[in-house]
Image 1: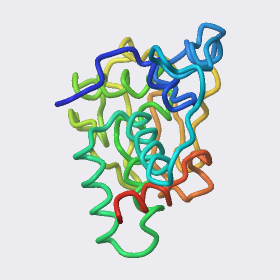
Image 2: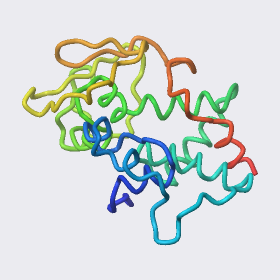
Image 3: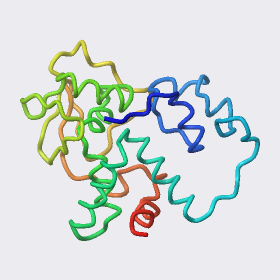
Image 4: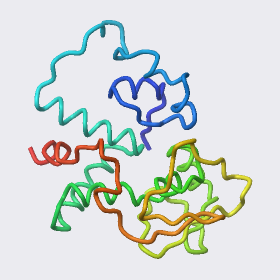
Length: 199
């Protein structure tokens, strides 16, 4: 599967916001975004004026990189959200938030989503007592998530607190409800993503 293998800090600088791709480093003075505000590349001394298309594209790219998914996965989530009826933007964010790798990260079992994805793919995560090796697995209400071996749990970044729709326990946590919009990242402008794919 295609993954970003270059510098993760460059991605944060490109989107001009913290994507928290490096775990604890993102919360310290070593974060490259706090040290260098310029865009990555040679001729990026100024921020160019963006067209409407560019604004929508950048928002889509930001969310895609934040959750560590491919373009094909993003399109599939949009199609599922469009077919489900109701608020497409909310459904799209719910699919992203309820991915198993994201839930593992939000529960504090891994310092970043990339680490959480590795825990899942290596078979260290159990969902309701059974091993699940698919990071894109969508958890449902009532399912419990735990690390099969505590030595593989690396701990969360300093300021990561589980959202209200997750209940943390000593071994992992439980999904108590579907996330509502106020329980998710307020900086994400999902309507721009919907406009991008609806053009």
